[in-house]
Length: 304
Image (cartoon, rainbow, N blue to C red; front, top):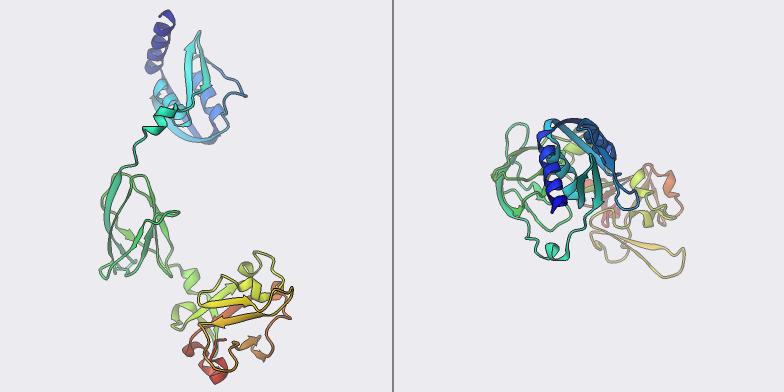
């Protein structure tokens, strides 16, 4: 009974004491030591029992010491006790019954409009909660409506624009203005009749950079392209090591030869591109429709 009274009294004294903190990515131990020093106490803990290495960013002016301690320790399942001008830090695991009683996060009904820098609505903008199946797209008016858990991170994106992320708290309306990604729009792509900016190309063209090609250190160019381009199917003709791969761009366009046309540095090559080393390639452009490959005529019936 005396110990309980002493602990309550010590906590009450903490509420009366003020602390000032300004830390950016400091360890939890550093912040706790600063608090105890300001209120004239000593920090006591066991390195084996509790981990105080978490990074903390906190700014407090004239904050109540007990409230700041609770803010720092409670979310980390860490408890503290005050005795003899010492603050003892100890691990405080969540009881099993407390875990089972947790209520699901509250949901928020969110609406809004997605526009560009000129205020024009963006049709078909993607709005998703990363890592989940929660998402939607904007309609013809650029508006959207969705339900998601409170505290979720919501990502807005659209081709040619820089994506943005927002944390949803209590708001019910969120209007977003996307900025054009000039780096993507100004990127050059090779088409059958020259080089053009991506922003003015309307044909079906996909580009794979050297960095993307060599992520997995492939031995063959076809292996490097697997899974990186939509509409392109690459399968190995047999299970033997080094066997040729079959490349199909949007299916088969001719009866006899179904292989695409290969162009290397502007020159047509036959027999595939197995002889090329992936690390020597600056980029690969795949021309998937008739408009982009028209200059090559019937030879490009299966893509370029």
